[in-house]
Length: 572
Image (cartoon, rainbow, N blue to C red; front, top):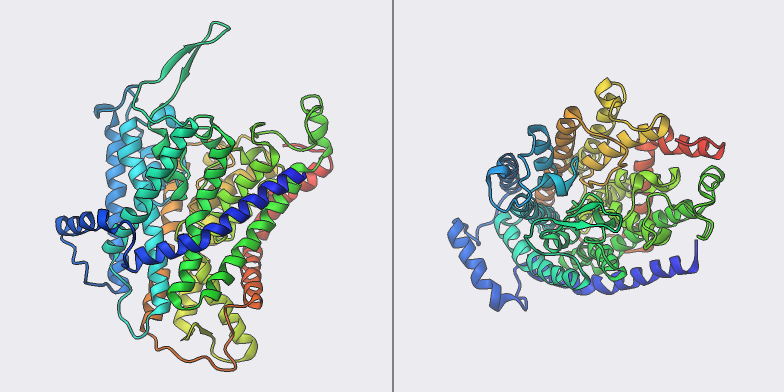
């Protein structure tokens, strides 16, 4: 650990903090239908979209109608992308003449991009054509990111409204999110990336001749546009197999900083939007503080673990790293180093992004446990765009419920009484996530089809399987890359991602609808305030305790056991 490493963390944190208020205000204006500086340009386009699609922008929806519209759009776009993948050999903009994507892999990829996961069981530059990349995958990055944001906003409206049977209009929310937030931000961001050296073209791959006389194929394509929405939408799917470790995706220190900033910028801004929409700015900052504390703790542990001189690792790499500071450099780009690699890994798994500039599979056991644990917490540490906020609000409801139990009175949250139905929906959300992860992991570490894909034995191989189903259910998309693929993993991971996305969104919308119908009650001397440091501490404790109680046994069989064996000199 170095002063320079902590300075990078400090600069990043300060810049992120400076963006929270302006981004949050803009998000509120867009999602509440208020005037923005883009209105003169985009309002006519917005009205035209409603007219062409037959949308009545003034009609609102109940939570069931909202959920039906969300599921319908997601199902239609899943089929759309699947068909494009299966036909790509016969479609234009395929200069490498790539074959159709196999059936099971096409299913996995379509499910992955529909759910904002962007899990990639394939090598992108040798599997996906330019048309599939742009029309199938990049468009999904917009749709899936927008779905996450609008579900979060629907829940905030449920908290804000009183005696209301509606929580907004899904089609209006989707249109405004895509048109006013994601599209202009991505255009600007893509131009910045092109300036930094990221390719944006439709050329065939370049054949280069090396000094040794060999031929090297250099991939390229519409990289910058995919990279922009990949980060801003917390999607994470790389244009190249090496993802953000590839110099064409992430060529400079500035591009690296922009990428990690863009992962958190919308999720952090949503916490400020929460405070403004509910009329309690202090509550928004308390939620932000809880998220930031968890982020800092994760980075500190990962940075310490990767900088720590383990005897077995250091002895094996001592010659290669004689001129480098002590630490684990395996799987890391030297141009980023340990600090930037662990900062990127922590941020991308705090959010449901999954982009990587280093290989998590090569981290030390405790260093690799941090990305895994971040996802296991539900990716509520800022989290994916929208998904992080509504996931954390579930924990807020549970925290308020716990506080009410402590004082023996009906818990209240911003003027709404938290009753049995609200707790049931929150617990349903909290239980679906570990259930799908642990069941799939248990099956695949027992069946031959699961074991044959593991490239490492013992606890590390177990961690690879556990990480894959955790990443899928958490819609993250990063991986312990030592795990191979086969038909069984492709099919199971597809269902893992769909359940982790949509089966968890339904309780969120049900909670939103129920809260919106309630009367608002004035605070009393027994009301637990949700805008204080004490509340932030309780919220952090609830997140950690629920995650620890649920996943600690599985972590004990994986990274914790591997760490103890590493201390005794055994490597995997």
